[in-house]
Image (cartoon, rainbow, N blue to C red; front, side, top):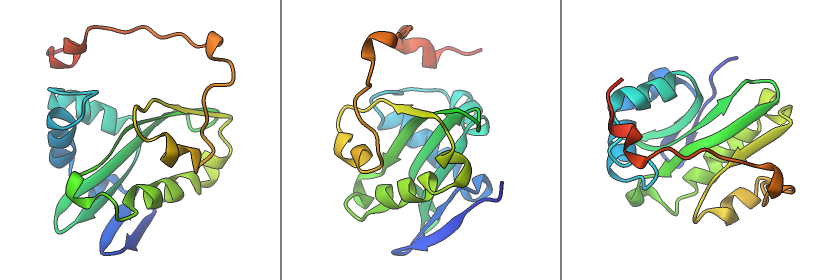
Amino acid sequence: MQPVTKVYNGYTITTDKSLMLLNDIHQWLSEEAYWSEGILFDRVKTAFDNSYCIGAVKDGRQVAYARLVTDYATFAYLADVYVAEAHRGKGISKKMMEILFEQDWVMRLRRMMLATINAHGLYRQYGFSECKYPERLMEKLLPPDIYLKQE
């Protein structure tokens, strides 16, 4: 599939990984994200390499990012979504979600999931809702320091 790149209010929003700044992504995820504090660079790189990513770049810096963990056919999990604080409130996350969810292959997925503590309103705009059958879902949580361990 061809990468998508659009300019929006001075931001370059793209699915082209070659235009994204992995060091900036790692810095934000390891220092700012409550879900991955302290995550090692190699873990972020592996997740990046094995996911469908979208991001926003401005003035040579990665200011927003999200990734879909997916099989590209039936299922995707939206993860690591962020917009750097100085760039929030400018419609960047909405534009990223619009571009992402307009992809033909994404529109054919049977199920997409995500977890959020504070962005329910954003994701509801794109068709997400609470799980219809939460009793069917299970998870296995490992200690938070799992991200800090070398492989």
